[in-house]
Image 1 (cartoon, rainbow over the protein chains, first blue to last red):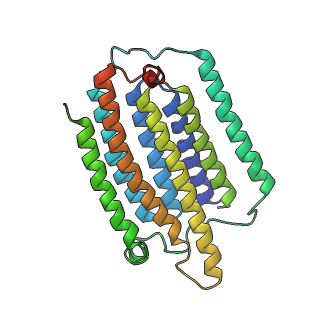
Image 2 (cartoon, rainbow over the protein chains, first blue to last red):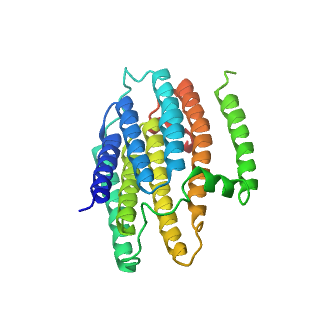
Image 3 (tube, chains in turn cyan, green):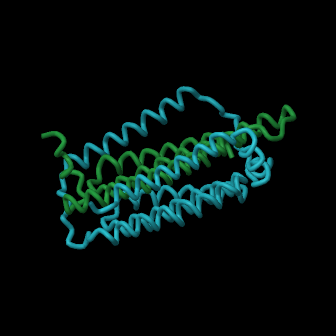
Length: 167
Length: 110
C-alpha cells in the first residue's frame, strides 16, 4: 500500500461522504458547507494528479466565489420560517431508486466494456498541469474560445443585472 | 492509480448529484447538486487527460493530453456564468412567489 493509494482512498471517501451529506442535510447552509468540503476533496484529487493550476482555480472559483454567492442568496432569502417543502415519501423513494439504477447501469456498462485494466492516470510524472504549459496552450491553440468566454461572462453579468433588477 | 478507480469515483459522485436533483424540492439545493455533477465530470476529464498524457509520453510527446485540462477550465468558466444567472433567477422567483419550493413553479402548466 503506497502513500498515494492511501491518500486517494481518504480523499475519495471524504468526497463521497460530503457529497452524500449535501443531499441529506436539512439545512441549506449545512449543504453549502458540505459542498465546500467536497470541492476541497476534489481539489486534493487534482493535486494528486499533478494538475496544480486546476486545483487552485477550483478552490478560488468554486469554494471561493460560487459558494459565497450561494451563501449570500440563502441568507437573502428568508428560509427560517421554512415554507417546508412538502415531504412526499414516494417521490423521494422513486428518486433514490432511479439514481441507484443509473449508478448500476453505468457501473455495469463500464464492467462490460472492460476497458483499460492496465491504463493508468499517472500521478507524479508529466507537467501538463502546471501553469506554464497550460498557459502556453491556452493562449495559442485555444485563444479564440478564451476570448469568446470573456464575451460570455459579459453577457452573463448583464443578464444577471437585468433579471435581478426591480421593475 | 488505475483509471478504473477514478471512473468509479466520478460515477458515484455524479449519481449522488442525480439523486439530489430528483429528491430535493429546494431550488437552491437542486442547483448545488448540478454543481456537484459538473465537478464529477471535471474530475474524470482531468484523470483521462493524465492517462492520455502517459500514453503519449511513451511515444515521446511530452505535452499530449493537455486538452482535457483546458476543457475543465472552460467548464469552470461556463459554470460561473451559469451560477450567476441562475441565482438571479432564483432570487427573482422568491420575490414573486415567496418560496423556493419548485412544487410551486408549475404555473406554466395551467
